[in-house]
Length: 181
Image 1 (cartoon, rainbow, N blue to C red):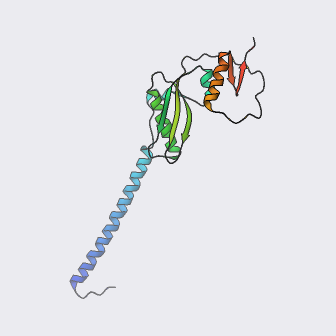
Image 2: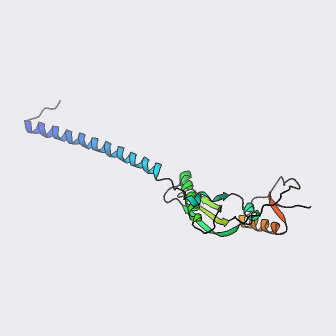
């Protein structure tokens, strides 16, 4: 319990306590608002919607498929996620790359050539038109090699697959398969 020499000192003490209390209340509200704002940004700000055209673009994971389908390369895109990293940022960068690819005339496929997640997410992709694909009969002649060498550059694989296709074969499991009929 405080003892005050006069009424004025008591009033000043109470006023000071009220101001400190109000400051604490204001700070708590400020922190709550900042947490709410951050959660809204994380929920709604972390998505890059796909355009209608981008939703029609297929993602091809194997360069040999590009060569087998006789796809025409249209260009190169880089999708970025701004300040976002991690898997959420990678999803944003992937969507951004597909949206950019959709802007290229005739684009209907992308091949992801590289990606990075930290500190910010980036996706690099080649854009293709695979609408003139020629389906071929595929017959596996032998078992694929058990101990395959390390994966080579995607461009080398695509070139080998194109050479195989030009000779009437199909590139499958890192080997040229030719039907003998």
